[in-house]
Length: 348
Image 1 (tube, rainbow, N blue to C red):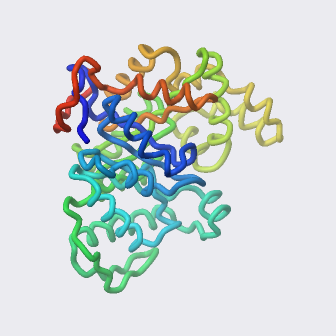
Image 2: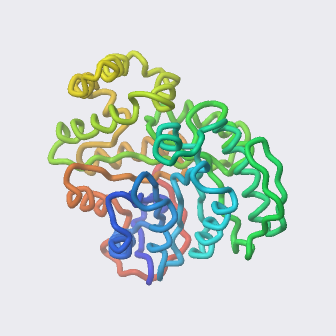
């Protein structure tokens, strides 16, 4: 199975996200066929309460070894370090291209509340996991004594054909710096193009060539008003408390979010939705027509995102899927002629 020719101005690194919750695993092969026909050569995954981060990518890669694959993100608390190394090996063997293993601590609500696992010293757990994976990917016997776990005598059955690139899901300075100094880069989300300039500097301090991947939320709806209303549900659900609230406050959004936070704490969910201003939605989501979305995407790339990963959402799954396909970089005027390795970027 081959990849389509891209337009001269196409973003070859533009990726699309498989949600892991919206699609059953049996649907992934057909969905991957549609995405690759639309020109996507890079697929990423997420995990919440549906499929895990790795299974959909393996299903998508069957018969398409030229795909680049990435997780955004695999939780370091809900799987052992050795299991994460094994899953990363499997992903690396599924593709002839580099793969990106995005890992993160997630949150106390998910790790402890949903999985029953203690959420202890998340920075340390992520740091130790990065260090362990580096050693495991080299193929030798690993005895690792960290501050959050100890591993005695683990060795992968096979050395990965290409060492997976480790990315750290990071929000604020400490984790962002870890992403640059010990990993290969960072995975970001819930930020505007201007925010990219704020956070990327901490990653680049340790590695000027670090990858900066970002899940970029695109909303497909009948009109922009409907798209904003849909996005408000995500803002109130994610940014109402915990690490994401602290992250947004650090980015300077406390004044804009305080009315929503106040209503949420009072149990007024409808009031919380109404308190989210349009300006905040427009900073954190890509909405509007295709030209407006492409323009917003280019703003992210100019700000420093090296791997833009579209996560297309919306009240109508069929409409969201249609928009995702139209945003793909395929050149409809040409027939597929091979995967290639073109790395053209969006116009800077």
